Length: 164
Image 1 (cartoon, rainbow, N blue to C red):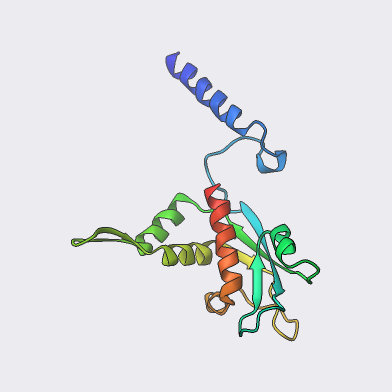
Image 2 (cartoon, rainbow, N blue to C red):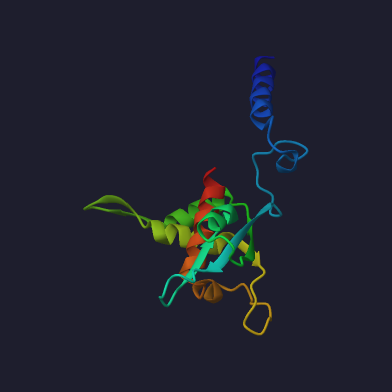
């Protein structure tokens, strides 16, 4: 009897936590498990900073409004990326590669590696095309070829999505 009361209280807390969330973000029933089909999309907007005379004059952000404030009137090209939701297993596998324990310093975390591993492990698809307009395969070697301006905007958006 006491256990049923506790279960009802937990369900009530979960229900309250989900209340007010956009309906498309809530499944028929709240679940603490991640389905393999659970995904989310990130769009990175890219433009060229015509006022900068340097080799890499791309500007990218997942926040188009912010770009438009700084670079008004520019042409913005959207690039879409689909990620799968991370599981506990993903978290452990990624952490094992990016976190080490040393006798001298204790726990060491390589934040760049952590974010890179998360990006590569969770990226499911993209709409990137080559210069001839052909789809670019989503391979690790192609992720490594992304312009750092674009990949940094993508990693920032991914981290914001996962932390929020």
